[in-house]
Structure formats: structure tokens, C-alpha cells
Image (tube, rainbow, N blue to C red; front, side, top):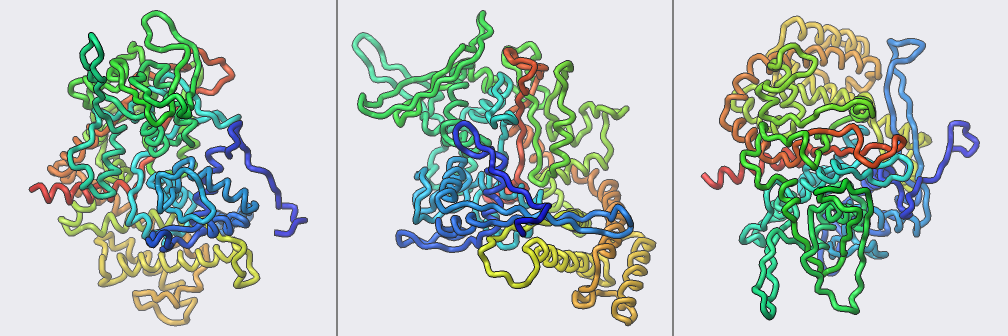
Length: 632
């Protein structure tokens, strides 16, 4: 952009007292960089690493990276017309600054050294790949910003993805995690899992997906035996783990950024009496990094202390205490939907909610707006899949607690695992096209409203258009193709997956296409649309098609809700997945205090939420189906 353009502004990224950029900026810049790269095979140490990038490629793109975002909406002066607004953000940095930024990506466990995953340094001549956490972040970014991700689809198909990522809310002023007893309780339950995670026998024979899944269940535990000393018998400590492993787990499965922040969270576990040091057999000349946190203690018989200390050494071993086991609810029988913590329990739980990886920013904003004010106390708890699908929970503003089939279908469409299972059910009943059409139209609507692109500005320009304008032109062509692919696939006469819809709806769509195509080509409409014929479609005409598609989409939704859902929720496969999902809920919240003790009125109240990867959930379901088939 010209320097004297009045719409142009520049600012430095905000950094924390630790010297790193704020987490949101880090994640956005990371995803923008990855989208701009051409991931491919790279060689190092006589090995080839697919879906990777080099240090030079990352630094070159970060030196001048352009992110363009275009939004469509009605013209304020003429609402029947559609106007497009494009905003372009340019990131500019030196090579050294780009390397430092990539080091932050490594610290946040978004990327790793392909040849040496244990390395924590971003090297000058390295080859790097995305981590499962990095893929989770990238998937959410692509979905929220309407980015064409065809060039990186192979990465999602061939690498493990973090299915559930726990986010810890931060202070807006300095980006520090807001620590409270409820936040630490939620984090700890994720950390240790809903039951002790002792690695299975023959773990070395598991593939990469299975190994990652085993880690996601919670920190790997072991039993440690002290050596017998004079006059004392050997003692065995159960539920132990290495300090370094704890830091790695927190960085891999939560929004914690770097080992330093992970060590602070682990020190909070010590402060709240959840874990305890067993041994640290380092030698006197070995370096030792010890993190100490301080806070208020309630006194009395509470296990919470005023300070906690965590040793980040290779030899340090910690164990889960009796209080930790109680908070983790390992010993609680029948941990199902009916098993809840008492509001009077000493460790109150935070209401953490799961968000799909396809959520939009408006949902996030509404969630923040609905948070309880300091003067309101509310009882909140997560609704299990069992309760969602059987209508046995309080529906809030509904007079009756029982859900309709439309409500149930919404739950199925929101949950990646249930949606995948529902697709299999429809396929067996020869009506899979209903779900495919509904999802394709939903994706088409999202892409119509917003699109983004990320390119390195150092690439030679192919036209006089700006990167944002060029991206918008390519996106418009893609939208036209998508619109008529949907028509030709589901709605054209004798189409491959022709929908069984109301005759009036079909005639209305055909009449509109006949009018437009005759005006564009001068020829009578023959029932099918070729892409070269439709290339002259403008944004307003596309929006009209979307409105017609939405009416058909509503018809298909009602058809699935009334005919398919009642049968689906009675199938054995649905019942089995529902029970498994209920068992997998690690942190069912109980009483939520209005404000954690010790906070001033001016301080922000922390919280947590979980985002779920759509790609990982569907892949996990397919794997579970494969494992089940092998066991039969």
C-alpha cells in the first residue's frame, strides 16, 4: 500500500514481560505463515520429511507477509446489491526477528524440528513440521477466516491432530494466565485424565496416531521404588511422573506457551496440594531451574499453601497426592452424567465448555457477553452427550425439558464424532445425500461471507491488482464453481446424488437459473450448468442462489430431523459412542464461585474452554471403527 494512503496504519505487536508476543498474535501469525508456505518434502541427514518447510522459507515469507481478508455484505445505500470490503495486513521483519518469531512458535509447540523433535531451538539450517497442536490451531484459523486450504489438505490427512485443546484465559493487560482454584482444578483434571494413565504393554508397537492418543489421555504415570536404607524398608510410590514430561504434556495439550509458563502451572499444582516431589537425584554440579509461585491460603485444613515450588530438572520425579486423586475423581464410582461434585466441595470447578473448531468469532463474543457478572452466582455444568440426545437436561428457556428432534439434529451436526456416525447411518439407509447437501451449503454460505489469503509479498506480481483483489477474484471464481457443483450434484435432473425435495422448491430454483442463464448466454436453459457458462455470475446473483439453497436446506433439515434422527439415536453404534463420549469427559464442572478468593474487584476472573478439532474427531471415529472391526 502507498505510504500516504490515509487508510494505512502500522503498529508494533504487543509483547509480554517475558518478551514474547501476546498469544493471540502468535497464533494468528503462525497460521498466516503456514498458509503462505508451500509445504513439501525436504531432505536433511539423508532423510526426506514430507509436509515440511525450511528455515530460509519461513524467514523469507515472514520478511514481508501479506494477509488479505474480504467480507461481503449488503450495500448500505442499496441493500439489494452486494459489496466487498478487503483489508490487507502486512507483517514486516528482519531475518533475525523472523527466526526469533519461529522460536516462539517452537516454544508454543506449534512446530518442531523434523530431524530432531526433542530439540527446543529453532536452527539456522533446519527443516520443520507442524505438531498436532499446531494443526489444531491452523484448522481453527482456516475455518474462521474462510481460507482455501487445498494446498495443505494432505497435512491434515496424514498427520496426528490434537483433538481437544484446553485454553486458559488470560489477562488483557499483560497476557498472563488468570490463576484461580477453579482454573487449576480444570487444568489438573485434564493433566491427569479421568483415570491413571499407565502406558500399555507393547507401546512401542503402536503407530504415531495411537501413541499420540495414549498421551492425550493424561500424563504417563509410573511406580517408583526407593532404595532400602538401613533400618527402613523400600517404599513404592504410585502415580509418579517425570517433571520434564509434565512440562511437555502441558505445552502439547493446552494453550500454555513455553516451558516457563508450564512450570508455573505445575508449581500451582504443588501449591494446591495436588502433586508432591518424590525425588530429585541430580548431581551437585547439574543445573537446576526451580519455579516458585505464591498466593493466598485459606487456612484451616485446606491443602492449599501460600507458595508452591516445581523443579525443572531431568531427574526430578513427582507423584499425584491423595488430594490430587480426590480432585481427579479417580476413586469416584460410576463417574457418569449423574456424578457431580457437591457445591460445598473444597475444590470448586470451573465451567469449561467445548467449542468446535469451526466456531466463529461471533460465538466467542456471545460467550463472553453471557459470562456471570460479579454479583451473580450461577450453577453451571457441562451437558453430556447422553443428556443432550435424550432430552433429560433442563433446557433453560424451554418450558419442557424434552428436546425436539430438530434440537437433537443440531447437536449431531455440531459434534464431529456424532456427525460422522450419522453419515454412516444415512449411507446405510441410502439417503446420505441429505447430510452432504446440508453441509456443502453451510460451507458455501460461510465462504461467501468471508475469505482470506496469505502470501509472501516477495513473490512476483502477476497483475496490477493488489494481493487482496487478486485473492478475491480467485475466490469469486471458486464460489461460482462451488455453487454450480452443488446444483449439478444434488439438484439437476438425473444428477449423481439427486435430492428428493418439494417440487415447488425445485421449480423456483430452475426458473431463476433459466432467467439468469438465458440473459447471460442468449440460449434456453437445458437443466444443467457448465462452469464456462456461469463465469459471468456476479455476487448479487450468487447471493440469490444462496437464498434458494437455504430454503432447500431447511426442507432437507426437517426431513432428516423427522425421518432419520429418531431411528439413528436408537442404533447400537450411537449408544456405544454416546457411552464412550460420556466416559471421556474429564472435567465435569460443579459449583462456579462468582469470584475466586483473594481477587480484587478490578481483577479479571479466569476461565477455561475446550476447542475440538473436526478433522481429528472424524479421523478418530474412523480409527475406532477400524479397531472395532479388527477385534470382532
